[in-house]
Length: 511
Image (cartoon, rainbow, N blue to C red; front, top):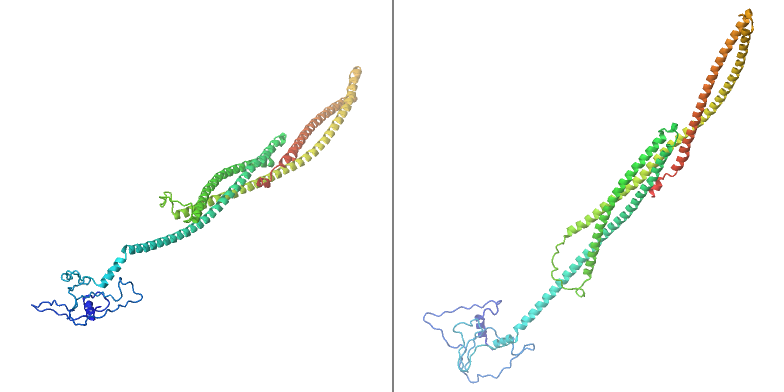
């Protein structure tokens, strides 16, 4: 064991052993000029009998390491070992002190041994030798690698959990947009079905429209069979012509609307195809993301796929995807709204057209009814006039018979007068044939009878002319009555039966 003096020297010689303790400063002494340093061993002392002491048992604590390893009582201060009074060996200096490696501090070598290391240094060397540095590095490397692996696995788990959360959010977002697209697809599909049904109604209305047009044209054609006095362009004729014109206009509107419906149907189908593609893409993407969400490290369907950790050439941004989803739905909704508006216009056209046609049919029926009423009244009046004319003809014929009877009587009187005058003119002889009063009277009577006969003949001619006129008027009346009966038969019977088949607005709406 070293003495306190050695420890103090060691403290002076090794100030770095305990850097936290303040160094003990002693006054330095320097040699004078011409003086030499003494080489005497300060530890040497003269031998004294009885100096040798019995061996002392060294005490080691219970928790002390093996004896070949550093102990707590080992000195690491770098004492300069010296030789005692016993022993011929030269004293040496250790080189494990701060002065190691300096010239003049190497140990003295003799033929027996050298003093180079202390026991503590030997033990420390044993510890250093027994402590495998590669094992420490291996342990450190093992701990580092395990820590790195644990950290990497934890980071990968965190990133995988984050990816799973993002996948769940993405699946939720996809499901939301898929639902929106599916609702839009269902709406446009329903709209296509409804528009197709309304298109069939419009086509049926176009076919039904042929019936009122045929009825109106047949009514006009039937009215051409009226006799010439009734071939007039009356209100009924005007309304029938207007009815044919309205039917033509309604057909034109129907055809234009049908063309618009065909174009809109093409747009609807194109929008449906586009939204179906979008819906199909979202279904496929949702299936892929759901499958990815259900995949784990223990799944048996995972493989290495080199080169997949890169953006595809056709990859789009999330903003563009959301914009595309919104635009796809908005475009489909715009097409559906246009289709709904067109359907509203279509049904309005059908209802308004059928109502206009019904209104025009009522106007035509009213005009026909007024014409029939006027014709019936005229027919009654004509029949009354015909009866009066027949009575007049009978009276004129009686008058003619009376005139003929009177002419016959006048003729007999004329024959009587002529016979008398002949007898007197050619029967009286000679001078007896004189112009007496009787002769003058007979002459005057013959003249008066002649004048009366001529007058009666004139009256007879006038009566016969009047009778002829009355007969002609009778024929005209009878012809006019027949014409009116014909017109009544056409307007009241035949046209009424034909116009009874005119379609109602309900038939157009339910076509």
